[in-house]
Length: 209
Ligand SMILES: [Zn+2]
Image 1 (cartoon, helix red, strand yellow):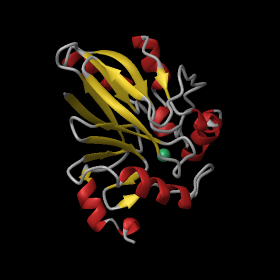
Image 2 (spheres, helix red, strand yellow):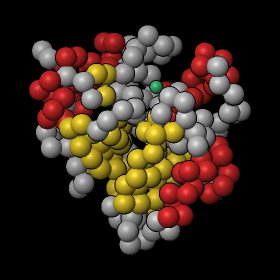
Image 3 (spheres, rainbow, N blue to C red):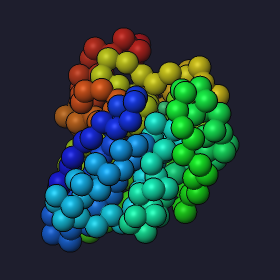
């Protein structure tokens, strides 16, 4: 599996380009900004984007999705419970003092238990509400890799004080869905350094019982 992680935009959202070495097909996750650089990575590996997956509808994760769709023709996938947030991108841009990305359209909703497949790559969708109602994580089981969005960070968890956030729900999602994964699963958070499920299970202060 080809996997490049590119921190994009002023909030340095971790955008992932995940590619299949055989078919040269790819999934781009959270293209929040800096689409020229994302496209550069795709060219570098000779990859064609088949899906654009958004872990949740915050502007730093979804802001560049339409531009990437226009350039590649790939559909945008997001859990439908974040539709309300998606309609608030102008408000989100104002909070952060950023330019509005305009209207973002979703091609398909991703639900818990769905699979996202491209070439020989396959990820299962975990619906993990709490940071937002529609937050999802993508789990690549064969590669033991979790793209966690803003649900889990190294040593921390996603904030729950924004519209649609719920501390009770994120803690439940983390215990029921995320900590159910094996300890040697590599976690790619929505921001900051990588970690593992085992490391977070052991030392993340928000996950201690
Ligand atoms: Zn977020």
